[in-house]
Image (cartoon, rainbow, N blue to C red; front, side, top):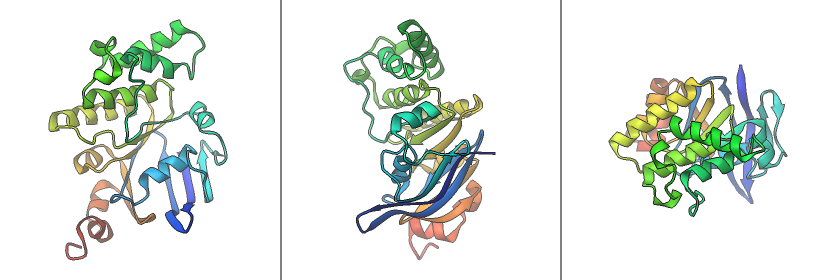
Length: 239
């Protein structure tokens, strides 16, 4: 059963169609990879899903109900969490305080919020950093904090936007393990990622777009061998 249905999604900025009639589903409990070259419309799709950008046309349904026209905070309360390419933690607050602030999405008192934050700190491998200022963490730590803040809102669907970018090989393996562990808790995941090792390892299915339009969908192997995908990434001569 699909937890998210994107139907004929179109987003125009003036005369530019950043997303053009894109449709896909995310099934409950799966990891769907969304790939495409730079500028293909991946993050714009994310921004339409949680309504940072109003949809030009089409529909987005979460658990069978349209979420088009809702406020971003309402979509978060429904159960869609996300991370961002550009990480912006609450820099002058501690790691624990950052996650605690997000936990107030679901709880109404500081004790419950801190209890939830401590649980997520442990889950994300950040327990040893709870008293550090968020701005003091290295890149890999800030990436994990971004995921932890999203998890504190207790999402049913998690949108991950390039959470592996800039990580070294060892950190990539750790990121893969964390994403799989999140899925194992029952959270469905839609992930945008340029690093093929990550996207091919974690995804159950992949949806590929280019110039705002769908060019392929299938298993990781099927998409990797698709001529349209090879052309988009490597050029006509390689396809």
